[in-house]
Length: 625
Image 1 (spheres, helix red, strand yellow):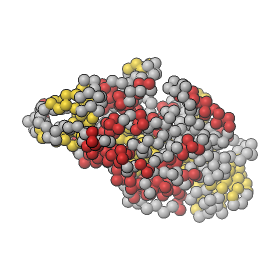
Image 2 (cartoon, helix red, strand yellow):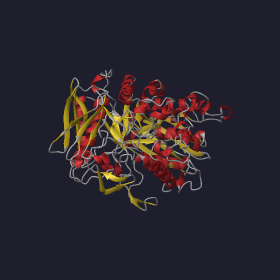
Image 3 (cartoon, one colour):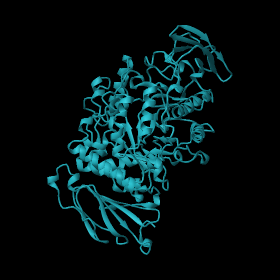
C-alpha cells in the first residue's frame, strides 16, 4: 500500500502524495511560509506525488486538482485553521516518546472508560486530561476509549462528523497533544483506544469527491452514499482506510481502535476490507511487539464479526454487546420499554450473561423481522458490556444519564451487573461517581443550510419518544458546556459512595480468580420468581464459586444457598450502611457466613455477593459441571 499525505523522506525533504485516479493533473500549492505551486506526477494506480526540498514542519499547503481550486489534503495530518483551511506538514519523528517499555495489556483484563475530550475537563484538551489520569487509575480503570478526534468543523462536536481521518482535532491540542496524552497514559499503565469512523464522512469540509470515487451510490447509509469499498477504483479507498488504522498504531502508539457502526460498511469483494485491515494490523502487531486490539460496534448480532478471517469472519477481537445493555436497562427503569420494546424479561438478561446475543433468530417488533444468530460458546473476552455509552446518553432528548433515570439503589445494581459479568466492562465518563450532568448531542457547523438539516433530522429522530417536548439546540454553546463533567461532585455525598462502590467492585473483579474466568462453561444464571436472579460464576476447576444475588424489585425474595459448596463468605452487600445514601435507614443485612442450604431473604432492590468452595467429592454435584 502506498503512503499518502505529506511525509518526510529526509531533513527538510517531504514527499507529497494524493490519490485522484480520474484526474488528469494535480498541483501542490504551498501557501506558508512562501507561496508557490509545484506540478505533481501521476502513476498508473492514480497517485499523484512530488518530492520537495526545503520543507519544514509547520509549512502549509493545498492540492489543486483539474479545476485549479485549492482543497486541503484528504490525508492531512493537521488542520490548524479548521476543515476549510490549508493542511500542515507534521514531522512525527520529532516527538520524543517516553513509553519504550510499554508492552500493552491483554484485552480480557481491561476496564474501559469512554470519554469525550471536549467535555471531560473544563479546558477540553488532551493535556487537561493528563491531570485527571491518576484519579482514574486509583478507581481501577486501566484503559481509555476516546471518542473520535479526527478533525471536524468548528470547536465542538461528538467527533462523528470528522472529515480528515488522519488529522487530530486542532481545538483539542492537535497531534502533539494526543501524543502527550498517550505517553502519560502508558506511564501510568493505561491503554488507549481510539474511536474511528470508516462508515461515512461528515458533511462540512468533505472534499473527498473532488479527488476521487471515495463514495458509492450502490449502497445507502443513514448519512448518504456509502464509502466505496468494493466498486470501481475501490483499491485506493481501501488502502486509504487500512493505512489510517496503521497510522494511529504507529505514529500515536494507540493500543486499540473501536470501529463505529461497522454494519454500515458494505463490501461484497472476495477479500473483504476487514480481512485486509486485520491482516495488515496483525503484521504490524508482530513488528511492534505489543497487542493491537480491534473492537467493533456492530448492529448485526452476527458471530462472524468475531470469527477469525481464516474462518471467513471479520477478525475483530471483540464487539460492543448492546443486547446486554437493553436487557438490563429495561429491568431497571420502568420507562425502558418505551425505548426497547422487545426486551423486558429476566430470561433475556440471563441469556445475555450465558450466551451473549439475546436476539438470535427471534422475531423483533422493532425490526419487523427475525434477527440475529447465536453466539453461544464465544468467550466473554470477546464482548464489551456497559450501562452507558455516548449513544445511550446523548441520543436522549434530555441527555439523561442512568444516574438521573433510576434511583441510587438501582444504580448500584447496574454497576454490579456489569462489573461482575464475564465480559469486558466499559464505563462512560463520570459514571463511576454517578455524575448527573447531561451529555447532549452538540455540533458547531458554519453552514446555515446544514444547521437547519441537522436540527430537522434530530427532531425527526426523537419524534417517536418525545413528540411534544422542546428540543435542545445542538448548536448553542451552552449545549456543549452543560455537557461537561462536574468533577467537583466526585468525592462528596452520594457521589463518593458510588465512586467507592465502583472501586470495590473493580477490586473484587481484579483479585478474585473466579471473576477472571471468562469461559461460558463457568457461568450460570438462575431466575428468581421473575423478580431477581442469581449470577453464578466458578473457576475452571469448579472448586471456587461466586454467587451474586440480585433482587431487582421492591419485594423480598427467598433463596436457598446451594448445599454442594461450603464456607460461604459474604464479600459485598449493597444494603450495608457504608453503601447507603442515607445510612440511618439501614435494615438488618444478610449473614456474613451462612450455612450451605440456608434460605436467605434477599432485601428489595439489592445485590449481595457470596464466595464459596466445593471439595473434590462435592464437585460432581455442581450445576455447572
